[in-house]
Amino acid sequence: MLSPKPWKLETMMRLMLSLMLCYFVGILTLCLTHFISAHGRPTLKLCLLFAGAVVLLGTAMVRVWTSFTFEKALLHLATLWVSLLLGFLLAAWVTKITGLPPPTPSFTQTIIGVVSLQGATLVLMIPVLRQNRISWNDAFGFSANPLRASLLGITIGSIFTPLGYTIKAWCIWVITHLPVLHLQPEEQVPVQVLQTASSTMEIVALGVITILIAPMAEEILFRGILYPWIRQAGFPRVALWGTSLLFAAIHGNMAAFLPLLILAVVLAILYEQTNNLLAPILAHSLFNVLGFVGAYVSEKVFPILLLSLIIVVTCLFLLLRNRVASSDGV
Image (cartoon, rainbow, N blue to C red; front, side):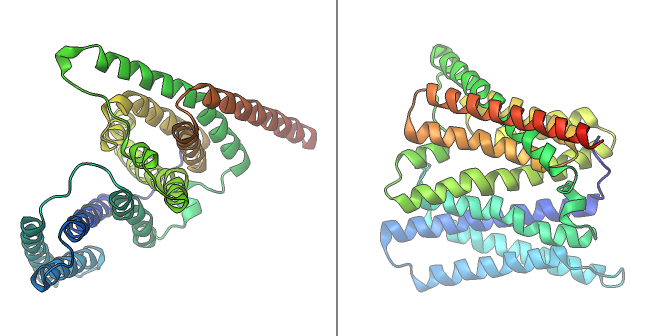
């Protein structure tokens, strides 16, 4: 059973606004890097506009997390509003000069996108936990039977992975064989970037993002923060399906939407049953690991199925041995 969490509406509003600002700064950075790659050194005017927008949006973020008294509330909100307004105006000016980057994914775009969203999520957990006066262990249950949570996470992840990729293959078949939809299925952006990676360093960086950073940040945000907050507000079904739909939607891939939706539901139930966010993090990470290996090594599903079977058998054996050892101890 999931233990109560201290997340409040004020915390959620601050977190969501901060993530929006970080993501917006990421888009600005993408626009500037695209302009530099296409036109060379940027003009002084463009640099000043970009710096001004970043500083103003950064100031707004600082104001978001700054505590204030009732007497200074009007001044605080006015400063926040002016910083946001001027920051967005300068940002719009920058995008008008640079233009939006092309939708074709690149390694640089992927890194900037991850830093501005997943990386920002991990960093913003520091003020979130500090404001709620709670530790990482208490917030996400990392100390609640970690061995059992880890083994369950790995086992569920390895069982779901072949199922998830089979569902994705069915979705691709449906999309391709229904011409009335006029849709062309595409791989997810990280897979496209991986397939075009030109160096070992790029592959390693993408591996770290896929296997470590993305699962940890996304599980903390969706299962660790949003799910229990909505659930404790008295809407358990909205918490389960709402966060799962949002999780699947933000990945922006139609073929992967259904398997990611099912994965998100499984991860929420896994968190509910273990009370330890380590379980869904490891399951999510393993899902990404096998997809990463399958995309890079071979397009055939057999290696993924074989690796999944080996991991499942190993984890079941360890679970059984741990259960026997616990019984003997009692």
